[in-house]
Length: 165
Length: 165
DNA sequence: CCATTGTAGTCAGCTTGGTTGACCTTTTCG
DNA sequence: CGAAAAGGTCAACCAAGCTGACTACAATGG
Image (cartoon, rainbow over all chains, first blue to last red; front, side):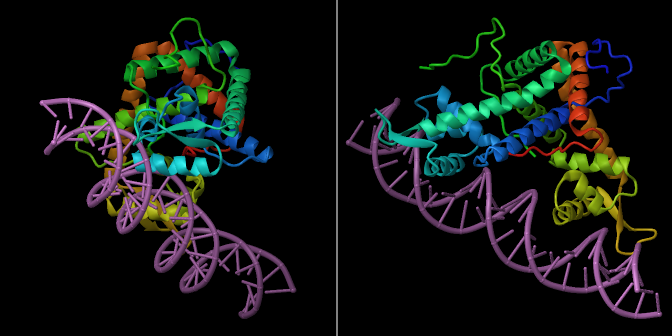
């Protein structure tokens, strides 16, 4: 039961370079958790990328498709396809841009905001399972260290999200 | 015009459920590092999934395509496609199975083993950048905590690797 | 010992989620 | 003003999965 081992970690024969893969596996595990909970609740199987769209739109109320594309790190055509899909499903709407007649402002519908709350809650569940195992202080430290890494690397510019696989 | 400024690095305003996404972003950042280093070195742009194949074959000297498929969590057809590709590129070879004439034993070539060493080294570089920032003790603790989580969840069975996106 | 059932692997065709390129409209700027 | 840049769409293509059908061999139970 070495759940709270000291950071010295003598017996840990850490293979250098293993951490990145562990990050991917942990994310996958949490993602699986979210999917199975969504299924339990009988919800549509939106994927993490969709949740990320929702979050961006919630935080950026005057975002356009091009904004979204650059945030997601995909082409505007691809982002447009996603937007069309989510609009058809009633999660967001395109509104005319107040000053630029080329552009469209994307806004979440109530349904979209509701889904975002649910997704946040389910991610939090998965996260909590980890906290239960290692302790909330450790989780907070990891959160902090991850942020530090990403802020350091990208220094202002937003981090890319979608894994290259 | 940002309504939500970047989180000020003051008190830990941890949004519950944020950690999973940070895991994905950190992995993506490390993966980007690996890719750009490979490009610098003029190497073929093999993806993380390929490195994972190499590792499995290195650890399981009598693995077949079906073994690999179940390990990767994909269909045998998909695994077969990957194997064909890697064989054409000279990273592995198919050998007749000693006792089962349907099956083929997959083995890394020297070139494959060399690539695995390189990939390990590049992942380690990315990992090290994080360690430089947060300190090696913190990284070791995170490594330990990730392992604990994955071991706890899967309890014996291998963890899924490829992110669902 | 043979008939049935199961397994390793391949081939073919489809789907998904991305790509590039061409294009129209509107905006920005020299 | 006129040229270049930018938002958005349409269309064609591509990569990497998938399912389904199939062959060849293996294992098992009368």
